[in-house]
Length: 467
Image 1 (tube, rainbow, N blue to C red):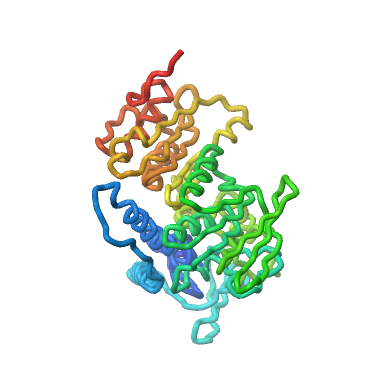
Image 2: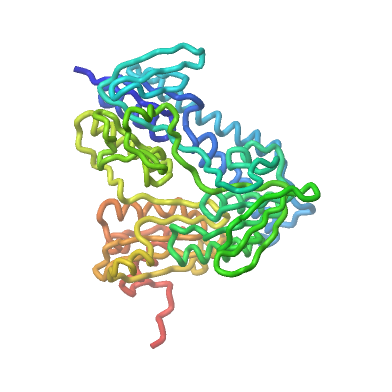
């Protein structure tokens, strides 16, 4: 008998779950109230990467003389064209997802709000105001997340915006105050600084989940980019003063205040789960961080699963949600998934990209785990020198036998380079397997090979330490 599965949410978790379920023979119904692709595609990963590319090009154009190219004028960012390019990229990808779903005869798509009636049925309010109800053998909740706005005086002032609203601006602000030192805040700060804004960042802590050395280098690079970074500080209030938004912030460890002014204030305090349509009266176990699930992402309601940003404590990463979507689909269809959900890369698309997988040095020390740290600087890499991107490093953490415990990169194409290290960690490979693999020359990936070789003191392009 064919299983019928309902999926609420068409983001990177939901639509991937629907497709994998269809591949395995299920009849699938997927309900999406907005656009397919979710936060990542429409208001997150993809739009910011479109702007990040423009920011990268702007930076390179400003540095053209370093590469032997003389320009008569400085480039200027056109906000309307940036917005149009972003919209075009997003629309192409959204259309692509819609075409993927429509290519499966056993996937039925509803546009509208899906609400959980009980553990076997979903009520659907379509965009045409039609009310439907369908029954299922299993249900997957992939509702996603939304920006969190803290309790802060002045949040209702015009010009105080979330990341969603910033992405809809048709101009580059003259000045931007960013509240938050996490991934969202730092990416926007880095992007808009290159596009021409004066940028201030008020950060409690820069990238609190990153390796300490990465966090420190990131802060240094932001300052080098001429972003005015205030660290170890919390915003206290926002006021309108002489046509500008004035943010008062106080340091956490000293009795001192800072006042910064900007045309816009971006509140980047993270994202929280969307509980709309979950039927809280059904007894779903949850906390303010999301739904509680077991190791197979099953909620306390029989037959109901949850994946992605709606899950309490879950990494808010599109690729993690997609992997969980495939995993849950296989569980529902009676298979034994082989996807390793424990090893996943995290990426930050600041001007110097950041990427990491596995444990940090701080975590290893806290757990009293014996480890070796090896680092290779991009300044000694030929491809990085040719590209003018030499300010970062690849850092590998391994146990004395060479088992990979963690890897951390800051520098050019870090988000691409981390794939090799994530592959190794997910499959139980060690640095020895990386060392014995020939890496093409000249490539940035040689930095990974050298960092791995350094665990055993075999790095070729690192000077022998003095005794």
